[in-house]
Length: 288
Image (cartoon, rainbow, N blue to C red; front, side):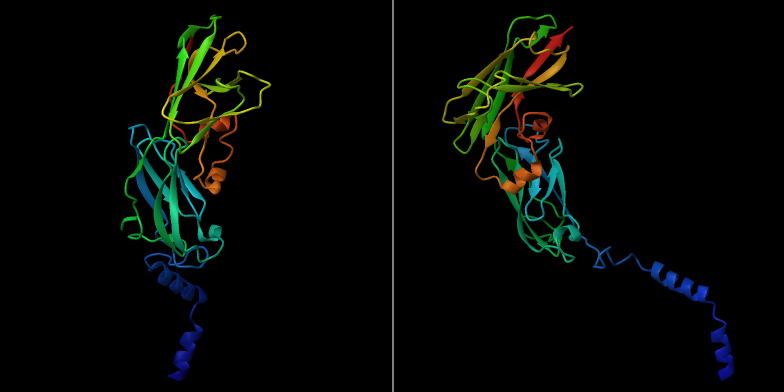
């Protein structure tokens, strides 16, 4: 009997044993380990909705997660999703634990925050402002600065030779200041002109050699600034345009790390279009 068992063991095929091991592993419901040999992370994403109190479109609102330097942009519907980065990106295999703020930033709206809890690099649902499904309550944002641009005439032919007037109207409160670069007192220094069909961008400075800025501090009155150009010195092809006044909103309560995450959106050029800000007006047409 002993010799018989010994003979059977010696006849076991190594490939057969390997197949049995694979079969055992595949019978599990899923791999319980992540790439860094930790238990698979679960609550890595949260969601919510942003609404602007003035019923403006919330698209482009910047969502920034402090401590993790993770960010997202709000969709036109107001929805957003925010994903916590992998543990390896958090400075350790176990991930970060703590209480953190999520910031909702539009340059001319009141800075708004929500609070979340993380443990070992994951969101803790049903804690702080998160519900059991990982959703934040609706985020409501209040406008603190209105920015409206009027162009006269608003529609011209391509052969139009007279001056085109751009008037910027600002109404804000004492929570912020506005910087008008490249200008002299009472004037608007520069504009960006975006073709709304092709997104082609043109830039214009009223005073090309001017580098001074003017700071506007707000009271109860609406403040206006103007700029003129013509199609002889500032050549634009026929098309539908949006004229965007170049200004920079200054706040004291915006984290420097948030602004750094946004990049060079205050610079005079294409990156300025990524600035999270809400404007009205500025429609301009050049006809054939």
